[in-house]
Length: 428
Image 1 (cartoon, rainbow, N blue to C red):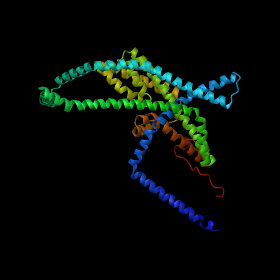
Image 2 (spheres, rainbow, N blue to C red):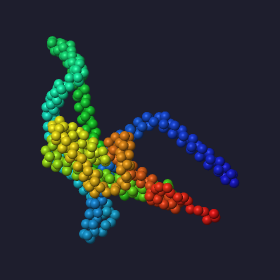
Image 3 (cartoon, rainbow, N blue to C red):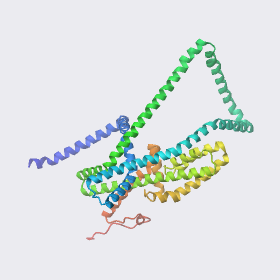
Image 4 (cartoon, one colour):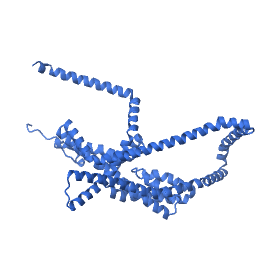
């Protein structure tokens, strides 16, 4: 009896304690937000090979499933019994084949792209002094035809020229007049700069070694994830069903499956779409004799991963490069990009992606601007599928609630002036 008598007070006390503790934690989190963010940044830096491995396993999962299905069907046709041990061996073999196929594709792409890209960059660097000379000639001609601007800008140019001349006369030349002054100047001015260069090179080598280490660890992590994906999935569902009611757990599991379908369909489809667009751009740039065709195709293909804004983001630096060579070709390039974007947006993109996200154009634009502003390039790429996940979850919750209340589920039923939706009570 005493337990029943004081049970309600105990529950109220525990609830009050939890509310106060949550308020204190919220205040602490807001007040020390920079420290908490630094802790999360440190954890993200430490665990980045794990994240890379998860992303790689996510990209390899469709290939792995196809290869595993082929191996299972081949073993079944051969008359072998598919036991758990045989299935594990075939699963690991499918992982190895998938990873080897992925590395082979990356190697082929790099072997095809890097030499041409290197030649394009070298050609651009070699031609850059000529571009600078052309720009100087254009500026000189422009100022000759506009004397007012020439009078306004020439004082700044003269001031800059005087400053450079003073530096040459007061700093550089005196230090070179005698051997002692030259040695002192080299020791005090030049050697510290060379030390900085050596330090930068060493830091670059260390960063490259760390990157190779992260890539190796991510490959190992992706193998483990692909081999044990069914076990991880079963363990996750086991935890969900042990914590939440069965109906809520069913909803969460179904939402996770929907999230995977949206994310995998969008990312894999967008990668294939961008690869095709890059190949089309390379062929057309060579056919139309645009300068640096491989460099232009790589920029167009990479930026095309960004939905909606991608083609325009890639077109701006490409157009500026072509403008340095020929303004007329720059105009042709802009027209070509517009036609290519229309082809991708209206024909190729819908054919490959379909309705993988289920978002209207407004929400696509909204998600790109929001996540791009928060997380930069990664946010612009992943903003659409991530927002589509939230949109799908909210839509399911809204439909579930409406269905529970026996209300219409379609949006068109709520357009315009609607009548009373509540059913009249039977006692009225």
